[in-house]
Length: 457
Ligand SMILES: *Cc1c(COP(=O)(O)O)cnc(C)c1O
Image (cartoon, rainbow, N blue to C red; front, side, top):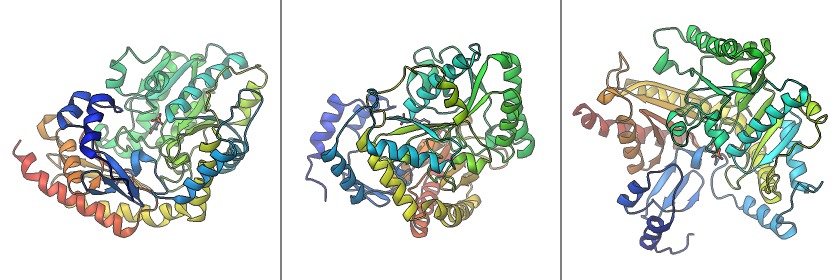
């Protein structure tokens, strides 16, 4: 049970001292402080105001095995007693770090046998950024520096993460991207491709990558990076032919293929990796979030033998963090993966709960506000529109309906995210059919409550 916190005092301290992530500080001040989440169990979070909320976002796309796993607390405590920290700078490593690297390698089917650890998804993508450029330098093609990414991609919040990402609002703060990152159109069929079949649109979006390669000069392009399905961009699931065509194009020009598996990895899309779901074989993948189900901050980059063989001819790769391969985080991640395997959470997502979520989302299609529902595994989205036929948005531009429906969901006991006018969900992989029913029921209620308010706009 939670401690008896003084919630009013915590809210006061929050406003006075705490700067939360990706937030308007003035808004939090006007609200009188953040919602204080005190404890959680299974698929539910509890706040200091006495609310029990179904966590439709698995924390922040990460708590795949759900909350309240004593086993992970015990593993962390045991590891802290035995060895709370040691680094990997001094020709040293710790047992959990080495075992986790081997485990991740095996989860890639041995195709990406080498693993570099960091503490966050953003750092994993920083590692990608530096390692890819270093690889081409060592290989004797130093001109290959350019990364191609997509508009509205999310690759993190560090300088490299924001640069690789395609969030214009993030670029505007601080003169990013850094030089050497080029962005191309995203495979967002509902918003950008409805005048074409999904197949034609998938090919057109892949062709944009080839056009960019030719514009930049293939000899200058280092890598293409993409999320198998975009998460923070609004759960954008590309047409089935997009990724295989992307792979064909990058192979044609000898460019590295990097998948950002920070959300899609560890079963989210119904396979261990999102790239398996999309049918491609990347040279490098970044992972975080589901790696430890958020119980510890840890991320990793898994790398092909071909790349590491080249790096081995280049001397020191002068990159790495104090907490690279942190033993407590690694021990927790290992046990998290063991739990996922023991409980068959990937198979369950693929064969049972993923298809069930898809089926239940379809039941919302009759609602006057719903333009489209889509999902892959346990990653789902609902497009809220003013006109189902044209896809027109309330207020003439996106950003009015999404926050309203999101807030109504939260008020009615479901945590979801509103991205523009897209409601997205990413529940823990332990979610039951009854809890999916609860989630869909609350969303329908929120849509019903929003309908008269939105039509009055
Ligand atoms: C969350 C996320 C990141 C950044 O991870 P952090 O741990 O927040 O740094 C990078 N890529 C993707 C696809 C993400 O969803």
